Structures are given as C-alpha cells and as structure tokens.
Length: 271
Image 1 (tube, rainbow, N blue to C red):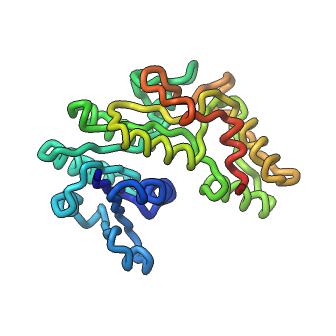
Image 2 (cartoon, rainbow, N blue to C red; image 1 turned 180 degrees about the vertical axis):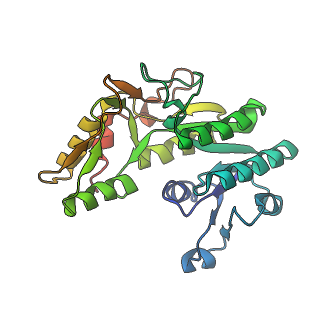
C-alpha cells in the first residue's frame, strides 16, 4: 500500500484530500497550530516550516508520495520545498505539488496549457514558479505539478467569504473582463486520487473544461445560493478581455474526472 504524507493537511485543500485518500492508502498529514484533534490522531504530525527541517519527518516516515498543500510564509515554503526536493533525490519517492493558475498571470490573450512558458507579475505567481522550476529539474517520474484554478464548493473558503460579505452588505469583488476556469473541491480531490492511484507524472491542469467570465461565475454562484441583491465591486485591471485559465492538452483525465463550470456552480449547494 502506498504511504502518503500530505504536508499542510490541516488546511482546506490538504484536509479535504486527506479525507479522500485515507480509506485507500496509508495516509499521514502535518498540521501547524496546536489542535487537540490532530494531537490525538497518530497519523498527524505537528510541523512548523519556519523552525523545523521537513527532512527529519521524511526520514522517519519514508513516504512513497509527498503531497505539498502548504500555506504560509513564501520564503519558508521555498526552503521547505528545496529540502523536500533534496530528500527526493536520495530516496524513491514522488512529490505532488499543488500549484496555481497564477503562474500564467502575465499572459492575457489565451488560456494556458501544460507546457506553455510560465510568467507571472504577482508575488504569489512568482513564488509558485520558483518551486515549479526546481521540480522541473528533477526526472519526470519524481514529480507531479498540479496547477489549480479557483476552487469552489459548499464549505470552501471562497464560498464562505461570498456569504459573509453578502450578510454584511459588503461588496464582492469581481473582474468583469477576466476569463477563467474553476473547479470544485470534491472533483479536485478525486482527480488527485486518480493521479496518485495510477502513478501519473508530469504537469496537470485541473480546471473546468469550459471558460467563463469571473463576473458571470460569481453572479451565478450568488443566484444558486439564493443571495438577494448582492453588491458587486467591479474591478477592471485592463481595457481588454484577459484570460487566467489553465486547460489540459497533453495530460487529459478520463471523462468522469472532468468538470464543467455548470457543475462547479452546482457544487456550492450541499446536497
């Protein structure tokens, strides 16, 4: 049975993935802040990337697969990933790095595919690119780079924020000329499960198969949530339509693991 360690398993994506994988694999996770639930769970290890060397935990646990869902200080994350990569070079294991569509946020005229050149103007995008570039220097069977767009779902932070802003009668920021794709947390964890189970390697774009304007997506989500008269703050960062979407060309997942924007919107309701 594969032994999996999710770095950042107390965060939203990391914890959702832990719940998806735990019944099928020998799955472990790390958490940062003191938490009675995680302390009692022998499959969770406390880890502070700013104070501790992840290599020590990796040497003790010897996972076959490391999933990085880390959040926090960018410089500390970069150092932690360099240590993971160094450990990978000495051991038979793979790293699945959860990256972002923001590695392409400088490009604006078209959607981005797996092997397009990355280029970002944002601090977040540049940070993700730095880790991606370090992984790309490894043999392909040592890594998966999973580029993920905005993640929605009934209990996701994005949907909770929309509900909170609406309740406070505060404005919800939308980008009327930005064309994106998105995904749901349930589909994302299923896709990562498949990638792990089938020993996939390389770069994957895990967004919806179709595109939508950001304003239209948020408007339809508000309609689905039955939020009356939401207040939108329209932000125009350019005069023209701009793409921030990741589509697959080479690593296309099976039909049952693909998702449409309609399904993303429907995912915000608990069924």
